Length: 245
Image (cartoon, rainbow, N blue to C red):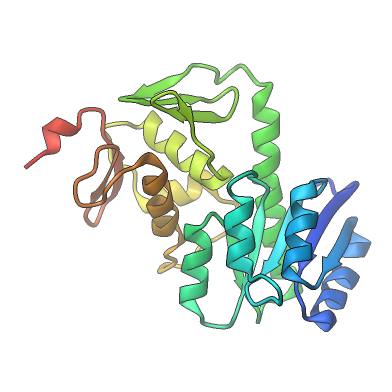
């Protein structure tokens, strides 16, 4: 098993639980991560937008500005990997975070080993984004209707307007576009875009698809781009008129 390079990996931790921040810093520090802990939402957003971090660990409940507000503002300008911390069994928080562009989430009952694994996974996906920009082997553009995907640059545009996609959303749309007019199962999508084992009933893939649909201006009931194939998965549509009832 290989390990990620952690040289100079700066992590922004936004959480008002001082004890938890110390525990995370004490655990990740010896592994090569430099932790900057901020305990107020507005200060956290300011530090995040200033840049210089490899990833952000973001709590939902914060003074000054909650985690969802921070996430929403960050996703307007940045695709930095964001790992959300949520209250135990609070599905609404998890779904809301994923819909707004969080890369992953952890309930606050997490173990430090799981936190490390999830953090490595979101950073690894981000590094794939950076390394692929200079990789011309997969440089052929993919066009589906008004959607254009440039794999070499890890960019996608709709009707000439660039889409601001998270790494997960980009990987989803690329996977679906490459298989246009063919069904891609949820399991195939998960294997394609993630570095962790999902539970059988993990709903995050559906939430990411929902977020992607919104950015494409798509509707689940009358889709132009992404169609749900019941009990099978999802399919990118080349000719939506063929699916109209």
